[in-house]
Image (cartoon, rainbow, N blue to C red; front, top):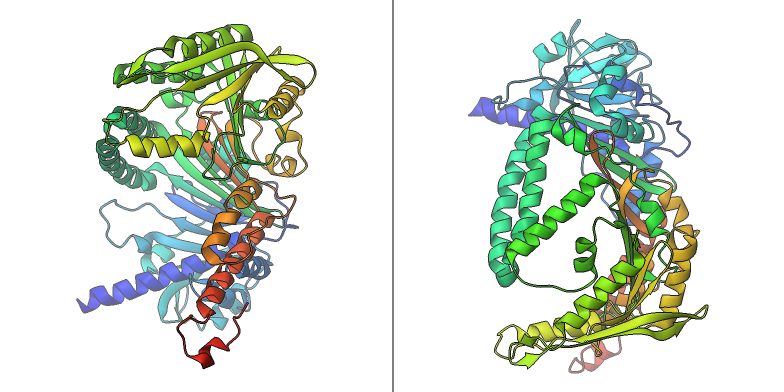
Length: 600
């Protein structure tokens, strides 16, 4: 028991030291050149199970401090203090590249930490060892803040360090291994890693245990959600099965998983990419050169909550959409609306863009009343005809104890440019005998406002434009953007964010942080008694995108620094307002307490 306890202490200490090295991921200066993999990856053995490489150890403290200060993060936690001590060590090459290497080991091995080593860049290996008071010859032993670490001069400007003497002694750094690592990572991951400050490379033996655990968790959660969803349980189960199938494909055909992280003056980027084995069924599927950016560009320039696009032009995505439609039909139940018609017209639909604008009635008065959609289709008029038939087909149908009322009027509304567009509206009564009727009525009010589902439909040469709510100004703007393709994506605050994403993305989503703050501001003010939170007049969005090219699947995130700064400022304001409210004297408080002024 005593041996196990010491081993646990050493293991914990080694993790802290490794984490200290990794803390640099947030601390790279914007001026650091990025044109290839971090140099230390060239020394990673090709049979390594994983590696976490850092491009440059310089100027990290300032960057970490800046980002940590935004949210009052304690830099003494998470191994940062160890990293700071390491950077002050004589003999360390502070401008060098470092890498944590996970060496091959039996899956049943309990103490897996002993197979982890750190290649630390040095300008003087002897001075580095001396400053750490390392003892011995060849493989030396040092005590780092109560953690026993073994080290040796690995040559080429590196010292290898690790918690196990035998592993450190037998470790031999590779030379020129970047080429083989790039091949394993895949072209998509390499492109992201070439411009990242930190690169995490994991082979499937490391990833598979997590996949298996995740599959079981997804299965259990899917069953629970399906049970709670009642009539929508079949649809929920389909989503769960799709996620489970993706995990199974990764476990069967996966080659490597790569994460690329960058932080600079603009903000933080994060790319997560799974590369599949060449020739596998999964790799053959993921050969899509997407252009979701051209579809989102057709959306209007308005204050928004969310804006996104999906490129459905490739045969594989069309087949997936048709399969989903078939599963929906098998699950039972009839549905009407834009997505129903999109699925039915998938052979002609090459992309869908959608935007949820800032609702004029606030967050409780019709969340979708300022939304718009662009459907890129080879047959715009055929799509409109299908929508008209679907809406009119529901009119008069029995729903519980009442009948549905729908209407569709062609050319009923004039918009900018002298163009006439169609209008539609629905009144789907709720069954009073349904125990969920009251909740469903409240949900409808929240989504559609007091008027219920209604909207406008118009066409361009390349597609169909739809709005939720009969807002002719919004429809006019949406038609113009769809016609010119110079709408949403052409905004000055969007362009820099978009430039951080890969060009071949299949889908993309932009989170309008300004719109969300503007919407929730009055509600927050009511809760705190303070002033409504206010966002800057010009605030870049947060972006999420997906790619499926080169036999790989990738998720890509961009969070601008100005968004982090704004959120941090608002959180501080919120906390201050809450504290100020708490400091207000009670009506029944003693007179001396009432004389106190509130902190605000």
